[in-house]
Image (cartoon, rainbow, N blue to C red; front, side):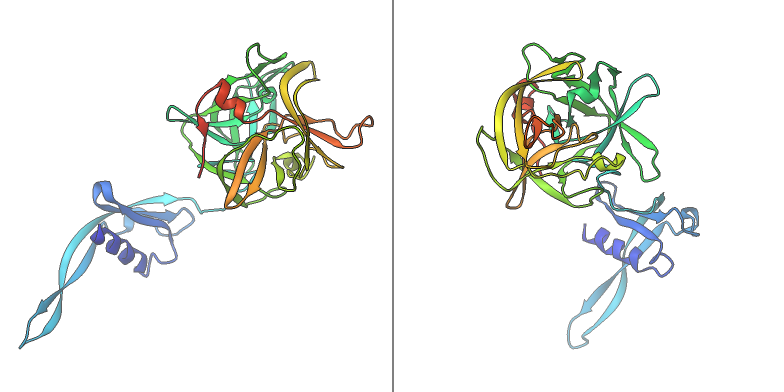
Length: 326
């Protein structure tokens, strides 16, 4: 392994590659070095040397003490073209995928809608993203394909909805909440959550999950969603009171059960936040609380904004598996 590590450094020290290498490192399983060259580089991988030599030293004892360089090893190098790296963000996430990010749902028609992912989930070795059931299926149709958005605004499919607590009429009999699971086709989840407003790049570690009882108050409850992508909201609010739990919520021709209500004096979750996260800020990261379902929009019949969510514990109870932590 030491030879491979030294070979990597030798590659990085090569003058012609110093400004062209995007990523380089050892492939221990095949005893070689892999080097990713910027796709915008004028250097083509086919023109580069396929072997890097690692010098060693030989120590000769007294009375003729001296050191001389010896050829210690020759290590194969493989090159490939690598796109220029860019930081991921809430609107333009990339594998490994994080909660609080924008997802696009679509079906067999041309219709596409923006929703949010809440958290990563793992069950029997398979990676999932948690989102809202009404993003997947509602009276307008079924949108079982799920994609992420690239920085050029194109989309890349990441998976399909394979389990949901609801259908076009609301919560299914025997289940609870407004929750769907997107099984990822190849990408993995990171156990991280985007925090902050709009197209934030800030992430925090998901450390576990917790349940908030009726009457909970505090200053560390937050939401994480992608409503800002469509100009509807900032993606983050901070309700300070869980006023109700186990409510039955009816809207848009659907009825969802076992919904909790988190209130804020003036700020509501918005269109596009659906499927995103309710979480608590804690030391070292966050604890998952629930999945954004909707809000009353600050209706005239109530002083506060009422923000609705099914607790994340329903995923474990109804589907199985565990939240992805970091």
